[in-house]
Length: 288
Image (cartoon, rainbow, N blue to C red; front, side, top):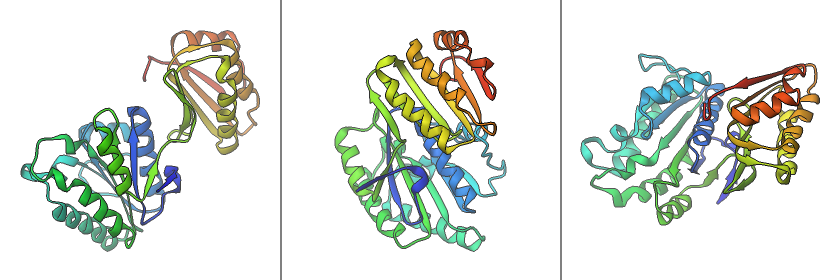
């Protein structure tokens, strides 16, 4: 099974997204939605951990607002009502419902269908749980023949390791954020929507190299770089200097927004980040 970035998914792909960071999960889902809307596809989001209205708010804040009457290219549904109506899961019925969505997208003039499902619905007590992986395997085979793409989201904090491994095997691909550094103290990864870099945890001089690589790639890819430090609790002057030097390297056409709180905000302010042309330094609450 291959690993891929969400931007590289194509019609026929059935990808498994396993995650432990809810913000990162939402970022990848938003990128999946964005790319589908750009391609003129119908996009269906089946949500469980967040209510449909809460997910709609999250996507709206990222620039993708579903229409209130349920029409339009972006549709959000509760995963439970889709997969386990009346408390029972029938893999054949679920596959039939997805086939109907594929046919509807084609009939109504869309260029294809994208579906992303929060699989936490499978943690509910219901009949037919043993058929979940049968459904996943069937869906992989069906999507390979259709103009449709699917991403199934599995929360590592909720599912056991055996289920996660089996789910990964049942999909044709895995999808995850591009990661530059990941250990119990620090995670640096690419952010998809808005485009940029996310840094969470504690960072010092020892992670200057992966931070430099992340910032350099962001500058090469995008005109507006969002540096998301809202979950960063410690930043030393060496790592802060990497961010400042990256800002100095902005072209006249580029902009950078740096979002942070507490001590990181004070250090970046003291180093003069807010005085660099093209840079906006924003003080936010942790996690916002």
